[in-house]
Image (tube, rainbow, N blue to C red; front, side):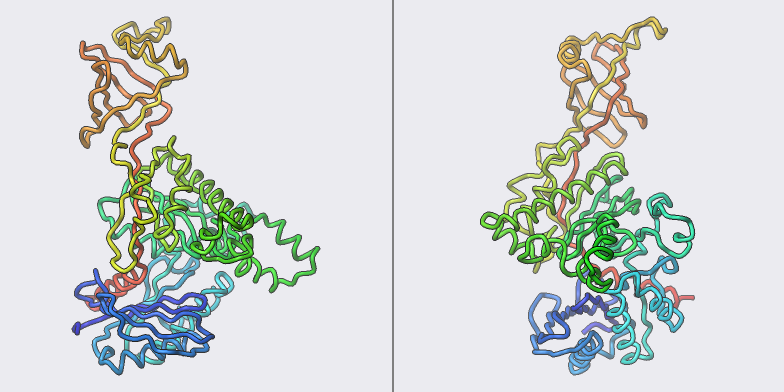
Length: 492
């Protein structure tokens, strides 16, 4: 048994996920526990670090506090309480006040209670778990880790809504969510994170985030977890006029509309069958309504992905995560389809259904990139021979016969392929004996074998885009952030 451990708590609307980590080695879990369908007949499931089932006990918990109490009792019976050094909690919404992990005290709890209207389907459960663990472990440090904190690096323009400024002053801004999931992937990839990365967290809740050098600069969710992508039971972005119409013209109450956009919309609402992606894919061929739901899900995801590419100015790395992102290769392929112009190409063999990521082994990543897709593509606009006069009367010209022939065919530019050589921007040999060097501007300097130098203005460089499936691990991030905060406080 580890000498010092940390307990992590991750509450869903009707579920509880918990894990125990050895503080000396946070790469793996000592124990994992889960309770689903809180409020109904359920079970407490516990597995060890190798995935071996240790418990599957029937449980009827009326709320998250009772479910957590049952877990703590199980831990106490097996001597797992004494090594506990701290408890870390996932908190969906930190508002404008909390942008980093912080120790929980009475003042924080009061602030989090005021944030409940921002995430009414998540905050009460988290607060119930906090109250239970503070009661069960009054002497243990408790740390809150916020899903919104990861996105506090977004520029002001990405956080702002087009509303009068008093609403922004009241906290009505775009916060973004799934931050612990995104942070865990950035932490896992380390130096392999690319300058321009999009992460697609696709689960029952879903969002995408645009990262520059591992830092969030935009995301699809906004003020609440209801916006952005179409989800299992949530519609994602919705014209506010639709809500006004429902309230003013249909006689629906605020509670009924809230239930609609939280529990009865998205995949479940449109398909009229299920929010479960596997179930929908199994019935797609024989149910037009299910097919329509999947078509819209993919269409809206592709639309949002395109918007994030515009924010980043291109893409170097696309990552899928979450239950759908990790286990639905058909959806990954459909979302990536049509983005060849941006360099996104998914290998159909690596992405085949029988190549699904096994959830039990939780590998570091699965690379779906095409092996032969190793070269950037250059779109040429203008080629200028620098061996001629630089005056305004000198017309653009090309000495290389291959380039002449291609530009004659394509007046607006031809696609050439170059191979990456090194980290200093040099690109490999081109057909016709040319070599290209990329500078930070939107131009390439091309040098022929004979020494003639030409500048090529380009529309874009379609560089190789890696496509990965990377399992996220929110609990590990909660454990890491909790241990780091407690250790810093102890050191000071």
